[in-house]
Image 1 (cartoon, rainbow, N blue to C red):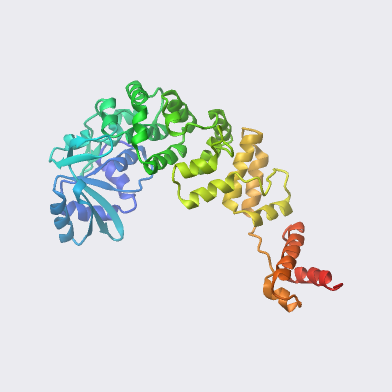
Image 2: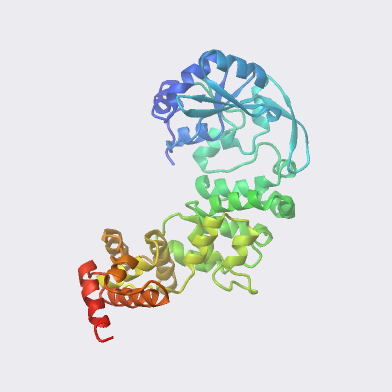
Length: 413
């Protein structure tokens, strides 16, 4: 990973290219001591795409809200008890949080108090690479060696790993998520030992929080190595006790699959799974959205059957039967099952599928009425028959050809 220079001018130049950057000048006008914090600083240094600009400020939330409104920002008190307000400028949101220190924690929630000590606030963050901040002059503040860890590919807890996990068990999962994206070399030993010892604390987390982090882990670029580390620490068995062998995931990744978490989850939990727990059960267990569950169910369907040998007529038939994006993800699952390696044939198959227009069956009930078919069950049967013929022809016949065929079928009656 090549990091940007930490020279203020270079950092500000990189920041100017971030969507929503324009509103920062008004925030700094209202809160001149505010700094960018957390993930946006980390990703800015990495030259990665920055999605959200989060800031911290020494002003109490009510004072921050008053100052922001004076410069014309719309302010939403999104989390006053946690010190957070959201400023909306030119339709772009900026989350601004008052500097905090933890008064007490219970492994899930923290009671906080305001502070004006930047290092004290940074000390409550999870990892050193997430504890850096950047002011409006482009000055980088790094109290715990986060920049060196980012250069070295080390994901390291701020302070003692066990203590940070005891404060919030979700940090176990966050460790794996950031390791999957930024980790290189050997993982931090202290972190791994602490996670192995405290892995059962994750059972106290809400299923929704676990699912959110797990799906982010599954989309990471170093997924197999991360899953192996999760297995080594015992975390994977706590979260997904009936998962398939990781070698199955390895076969999928070896194909060069896209980083889509749901089809990777479909490999971890194939139909039937192990001990009878399959993809349907894991979707319910993780309380995934109805849309995500529908996608998972579609990914593991056996129909329509996919094969690299399908001609264009066959491709049109399957494209009529199932959504294009699902078919493409299913093709990766088929490639992993059959080959477990890159393959030019499957690559060409996907390119051909992408190039096809979406087939649309050209007849409707009104067309059959015009041919003398009465509405009711008989009409439905004839529609199925003509659609079956149309599919056999590779979805190529137009409306006129379909009507001619149907007329020929109706005439002997």
